[in-house]
Image 1 (cartoon, rainbow, N blue to C red):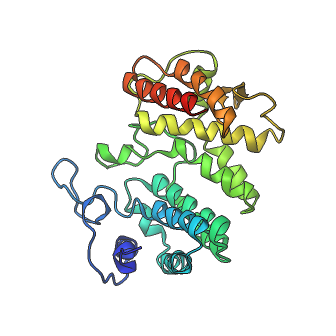
Image 2 (image 1 turned 30 degrees about the vertical axis):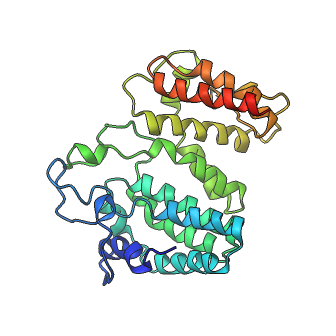
Image 3 (image 1 turned 60 degrees about the vertical axis):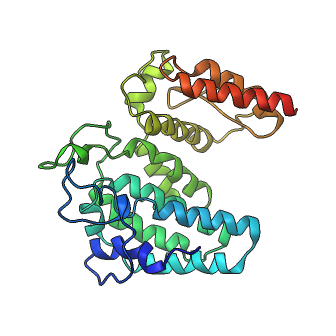
Amino acid sequence: MGLSDDSLLKPFRQMSGQPAPGEDLGGWYHYNPDYKWGKDEDGFAPSCTFGQWVSALARMYAITRDQATREKVIRLNRLYAQTISGDYYDKNRFPTYCYDKLVCGLIDSHQYVGDPDAFSILERTTDAALPHFPKHAVEHGKEWRPNKDESWTWDESYTISENLFLAYQRGAGERYRQLGRQYLYDEYYDPLAEGHDVLAGRHAYSYVNSLSSAMQAHLTLEARNICARPGTVLKCSRIKVLRLVAGDRMKRCAPLIVRMLPPALPRATAALKHRVARMRTSS
């Protein structure tokens, strides 16, 4: 709540060629048009967390009903809307990643704050963003924009379907169901569905997140109740996915996840085992 609106909007304004007052937040959030990977410390992913902050504020309002929080969410959305441009994505190492976070913030603003303009801002954002995206999900580390250094291959287009499907579910329109389907990463999901471990060597954070897109695909594209039995392994877009459900069902589902985690993730396995043990103790 204490972060300056101008500071939060600064990289958007800079990348869109607008006046950009306010204190620079530095770090990854900073925009440096001459940033050199491996040389510069600040400027790696300008504005990358903005959408997540808006989402967090929207959810905080849903819990606290604090009007100042609601006002900040709506104000940030209006200020952001003034910066929407294709230049932002053209100058961005992570166009789909940053778009995904903006989608999250806007659909949460609609859902939890009741921002009447959230979906219209989302439409303008999508119109500006899509010409700067690959046409389909691209493997982490694979070049899809010419004449760029290696760091420009680290975008995460294979994770964006989750929030696109959620946008559709919350009423943003058919466009988002279609886009969600377009960016499903079947080249990754298919081998998993066939029982092959293709996780080794992949960027763990983003490729695990990608499985949430597969789950949302099942919820959105299958249009049927998939929770007849807690912990059931389901198939979606030719991938077996596990639906986690709240409360008592979570306690029964979680041990299945422990068994599914590959040996290459011992710390994650140990942490989840500890969490499952605590849930069982508290039940």
